[in-house]
Length: 300
Image (cartoon, rainbow, N blue to C red):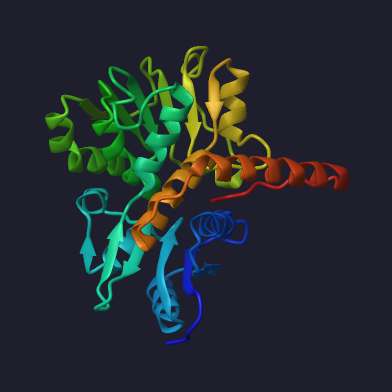
């Protein structure tokens, strides 16, 4: 295999605007680790080939983004309990013996960022007693539902345009919800009185808002979009207009990346300076775009 700094990558479609290479470069500099990190576009149906190509190039591991997280879980020879429950993986790596392992760091990444926003500790049930609405039932939602349950939520409702997918996701997590005394259900329409609404749909990727009942997003609600952008995502803008507190997924992206980095390299970086650097860079890019009359979203 090729010699030099260890190779890692993010696999997905789209990936051209992914911040993962920058994040891992900052982590590597902070932790004195020699590595390089690439973006690799996966054509439809081409995940296995893209993964094989990365390995042939000497790859040690990869992050996986939309729409390939279910493919990543199927490809792994050994899955963590969390990734197996989710049926989705966002982090892959090869052991010294060549065994491909899979993990899902999205859940802990979300919890760490929510704890930051809520002024709580990520390891102390930061969602204790809260009612949560999870929008979506794809790879992103699958990756975070288990963590939301374990974080102490009293009730979680899952909604998806495809009701059967939401019901299947809930059924898969029913035992975990029972253990944590969390009332978990799927719902035909978004509703209730949640204090946390998590958008795990791909709507923001295309700049689309969601049709939600009036009053769902309101003052006192934290609306969290797993996507991020240079300007507020459609969901974040929708929430802010309704008077809710809102945040995008940049903090989650950094936190889940730190967990991946720790799995690969054995050291966990400090995320605060990296998140601050990314915020500054995004604002600088936004100013440049506005001066040029351009506005672009930045998908994970």
